[in-house]
Image 1 (cartoon, rainbow, N blue to C red):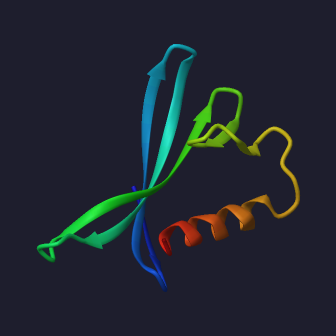
Image 2: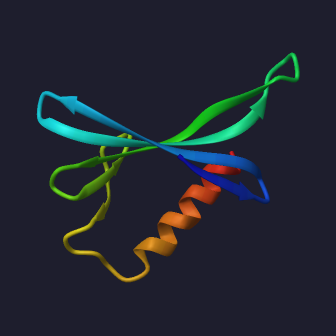
Length: 89
């Protein structure tokens, strides 16, 4: 687990290894600390990233985000901004 703090509040990223029909993969859950109706803390998942054995990281909807075998310029700063934006939801 990776703890995050941003102007939007506290967050965390949890890695969860999985095995599916196509083999092993992992999911990164980006979660934001929220308050429920009783003012109790809970972790709300705001973004899910999936990584496979082909070094591709995709969003929950299946679009390629990063191909680790052929990275492009500024991809890591774009990923950081996307995580910050997800925490701002």
